[in-house]
Length: 263
Image (tube, rainbow, N blue to C red; front, side):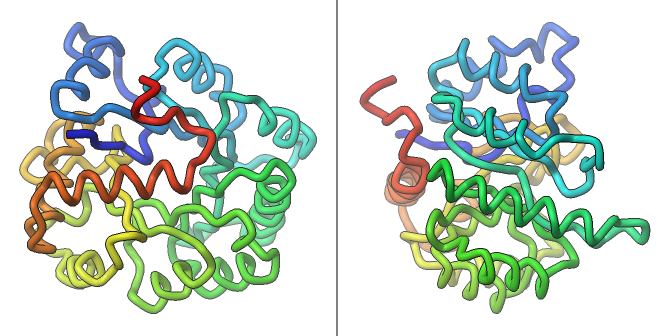
């Protein structure tokens, strides 16, 4: 079986213990059928580490982006464009809008979000979208900037069906993380059952949001199989069929990623 973790942050894991050195994390993921991982960048200062991991492990892809909560005025836009053209970079993001915190710099977020979309279109690479408490503006900017030209993924989805539907109409996939396994996520479960099979992706978003029943442990790509199993049972599909579909979806979207037969 071949599973793809479409979104994680290997460089943000606590890798200081023997159990969590990177070689062992990758090895455990393979033993759990997770054969490809997209390691997602959240800010420019971590980009070199994200890229280094991707260059060392052929089964790890890399992205470049600036998380809406990590933006700074003094970062040059040209940096994003120059790094986005690197051949090992398969996606632009994590980008988007996050109005959850009262002190969110909303206007700055919107400006950077637009920049990410324009650069994604320039380099012809899909977007990785983070959105929280910002449904209206997220959808509006995606539409105004014609983000459908490159498409992408709404990662760690935790919004409503209306947003999922409108995002899919703009050529975006919907990705579910460990949150979907939590008992209090009834509405999220309904959405996970309703997203068409050819529009769904899965992720760990590790080291965050470990799936049930491992919320007390650091999340890692190996836990993706638990998420896949949960969703396949929720959708009443054989696990192998669900794994095949989500893997095909990933490589259909991220066309610069290493294909399964190349690993």
